[in-house]
Amino acid sequence: MLNLDAVGRWIIRRTGRTLDQHATDPVPAAAHLPQAASDMRRARTELLLTVDRLRTALINEDDLTGSVAAVTGSLADIEQLGRDYRHARNWADTLITDPARTEYAAANTGGSLHRRYVNPGDTVLVVLPHTDSCRKQRLAGRRTRVRISQSDAELDPTVGPGQLRLPHADAGIYHDPAEGGTLYVLESAADKAAASDD
Image (cartoon, rainbow, N blue to C red):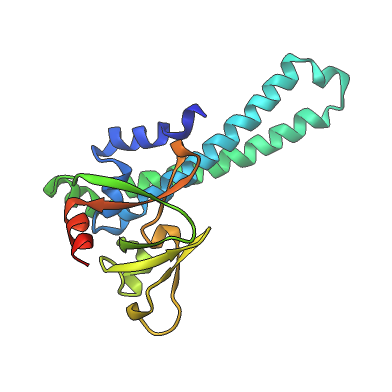
């Protein structure tokens, strides 16, 4: 679908940084931008598809041969999806204009990163992002191994007591919309060198 990376391009134009670069910045507003972009993509896609279905029904004159509820129901869906999109866009705008994120980006150039594609069942080395959740648990910035599942990741038991699971966004695992949601982790040159020493 054409709009899958439109949100990523929009964020680059607004911030001068890619979503991958934001993901590794040690600022919560930046670390949350990949998830905000994902939410915005999802809302935008659902809105686009619903508007397109309504447009097709009107072009095909389905509103004249079927019940009027088919059209009015679609309008109610569009209204709700518009609210969902507005909420997602507002969250992204808030993160983009966050003073700490803006200040950090102005003082630090975005690093060069490499995507390493992974699959559920893989165990990989990650640097945990600076999301609010990771910061509250004092995990942000730590390098650890995680075992990836469909929706979350299990952290290496040496990280803390008991079994600790984090959603993908908090475990440094991202979804590539251009590749059908394929999972990936980010590595810098320093991360790759450290991984080879392990």
